[in-house]
Length: 589
Image 1 (spheres, helix red, strand yellow):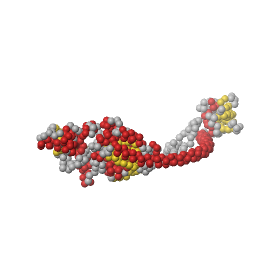
Image 2: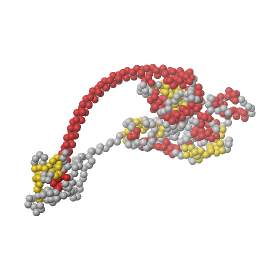
Image 3: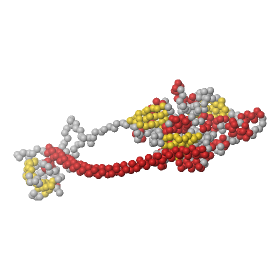
Image 4: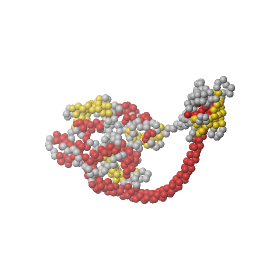
């Protein structure tokens, strides 16, 4: 508590009245040491770029995004900042609350943005990505118009898929008019396709199949089976005869289109995998591998970062709805009882859906971070009809090793053989790890026993030392209290002594009372007081000599009475202590 301040211009304060309250010496205030800010280093990956960001831990996640917006030219609303150890965080989250280490690695996902184009028109393209395009699409056969709004970051492929939902014309059978000449790739975003802004007209119709062309030219009926046998390309047009692609492989495609395996731009990996498992069960039945629900990092923890005897291989299933092999692989191989049983016993199975571009980009980023650029490039270069993929991962001391990449064009026996071959490699490594772990645990047990004995010895020594220190501290504390009490008593005594009125002369115009006070030690205190002085002045005089009235009684002899019980505001004349009186001090019990 800071000490009192005095104004030299103000008159001196009157002396305080005597009181029994303790007088505490003013202690100096503690010096406040300002906490130095803690700096955090972030290495942020985005595609082929790395950005180093250094911030105080009092900053927020949103401030990191603002720095990245200037460095990467990516709008903050379209930026997903991933890699936090505690899961997804808000822009308003303070870095200090995340308890981060000094060095951190993050990565940026931009699922709503297309791959970067040339820098010459980067500014205009960035502006177009934030614009909305109105597409007036005419369905030629039924002469019906649809007014659809798309953001500039949407792709041509997304437009065609939306039109399929409205017209039931599959993407590969759509015949378009009105696309700009620059729109040569379905993966191109609308902002760079050359569409007229803000409104553009298009026409779509159904492409005439080869079968219909032959029927119109030859004017003869053709059997569906004959067409399928004679021309492999006609298999694409099975829907013309009421047979959809999904039905060819024993699965209705309408269900797949209506319910994607995983939501696009999945924010929470656990929620995305819950939907994946539910959709997988609805398509292929309940006999399927048990997919791990959680992030890929959590799957690593479950498979690799446990005791050596409990470790398992990690199997990553990569799904792709647009591959013709997907339904066959899932229904006939992945859901085979032998495969399901073997995976359940020996693997942790994790899954991801690469159908949507945003989810594909997110997995490639995870893959690059955990397995390296070689595996990421291998998956990136896989064609759609080579999916689904099955990655077999083994955890090693320094890194995670990809033992095998199994493509969808396989058989149950070949899949089982590859899984068993991976298990042989893993089992050999596991036995070595178990041996090393047992030896390490034995060494650690001996060391723990030695450390425990040493700890007990230290605790005994520390207990003795602390007991001695407590005793010394208690003695010091008592001594300090005694000194403080003495200082307090002395300060009160001096203040009372200074406040006493001067002793009157024997020859005085006013009546004078002479008091003789005997102390407990036998000494006498003598002093003259004016008969008009209050009894309180006598008490103050006695207290100034070291006998405070709250500790001692002042007694008169004839008659015997306790003077300290009288009204201190009465004069000496009123309490019959005039013209002289002998009193004696007695300590209170």
